[in-house]
Image (tube, rainbow, N blue to C red):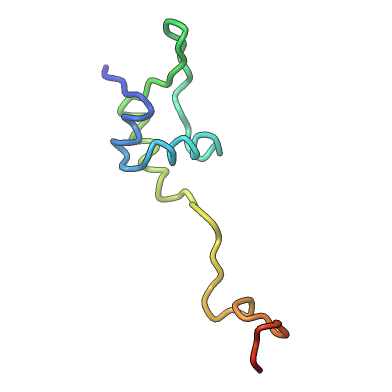
Length: 84
């Protein structure tokens, strides 16, 4: 059974390594356990692990929340810079 590094898994998923690491740190994706080999720690990803993350990706909410256009928060009343 072929295994992949986290960097290779990110490449197969079509996302950056940094994004995958953020998702792991935030607990947004399930990951294979950490393995210790020769004093090095790494995750050995299988194709089934990668496919499980691929199915979860569309459900992950990313980035900052944006305000909807036309909401009352877009132009606060009484602003110092408003020309009412």
